[in-house]
Image (cartoon, rainbow, N blue to C red; front, side, top):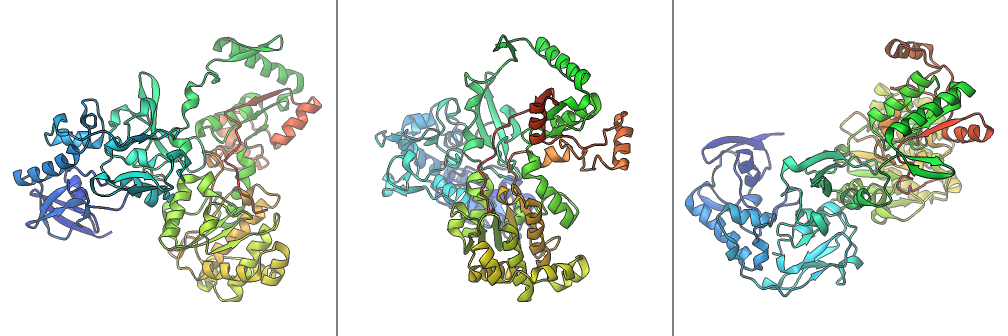
Length: 625
């Protein structure tokens, strides 16, 4: 990206083209109050608290782009007075509690930074509030009508649940539906809470007033969300050894300062009286608390007895796609090295194995081809068998924003949910007809000359065989098979085929299916035909995982037929490499899958089953078949 060199208070600084003066001042080590500004949002320039002088002219730094050679002043006494006056005018309309000594709000901190004391807040306190929502509290008396919450709901989440009502000094935020907050379209992402600069919108309880902008870095612990497969970066804030709040990390590579209701607020289970905090052992038909030493000794004796009675294959383990890479690696290694069996499996084999097999067969690697940032640059999205607005909310919000900004959208899903409501074309195939639908789209790409001939000639193989196959899937026949009107099929293929930068996003509706691998390969064929993989002409094929570490659980080898890195246990060379690393031979026969484990247990062959992590069901998938 082209850089722009400017001068800030005598210091030269280079910033990317299009950068605001506010960002340039911060890059130079300065800081300005900016009560209407949030880096996650478009600039507004309404509060006038970030005034600077640029080449002699007074300007709001947040809405003024950095021009080459411009000289910016921020530190003159006159500019400080202008900014102080702007902040004081805003604070003067609020009640004294807005600037109370314990307030951590951006406004309170801005007032302290420019020398404004609590006495500046002289407003009344009779506009009321809204406490109907379980995770959000509204105190209208603290609202300065900056609009950040409204813009967060619109520009980031895409829900448009909030608006500003009233006129002049009486303007205040309110649910767009006009009733209580709890009855509005709010999806409880927490974005409004995190962006509010005054404390007008807060999270109740110990998290009150805690936002990603006001909590010091030293009291945060960075983690990754443990729910869906998006992988949002979160900061956990603790007080007195207890979790006080979970905040979206503004530098999170995927969520970029956003979260969903689960990641943001669903940490109450930590203090639930039903949470297990010590081992339980069954005695006389009842589970009773015991110490860790006693519990571990019982487990070890039980595993040893199972091996002695039935051999290594009498033991199995079900690992978890919610566990870390390290845990999954150790589990599979324990089964193979310490026990001597390949009986290890996890739920990702159902939702991810078809992706791994299909993507590896098509592209040589068992993962998605592009990042979410790449997908967000697409001018046409083909979303298949997924409901990301509900199942992967942060990615769903990003995809929705892309559509709202003009990207074309094709949704293939039997249900009219989520993104389907915004689709240019919504394909609703009969269950079980995924592959025929994808072949029909590919047929149109070839028939109408929408394939990238140069790409296919130089970087792909198998086109003649695919062409012969696709000859049996003209639109009319596909319509008979799938129930999708031929006109809709052709329209969808043309949108995808004529786009400059198309991208495919698919979910569990493709993979948790009898023909899941075939479906993934057929989708991959669409991207290959378009030359939309590994080029600047598109953003490939991208799976949405069901849980937070589906990819890692499989990569680490917590599967019955492959070792870490997807080497097959039936391959002598793979087993030899594992033996050289681990020092013991690896069983050559694939282990039991989860359903086979239960069957073996019922038959009396499986004597010990170790279940690890949470076996909770992934977010409800949308199925195309």
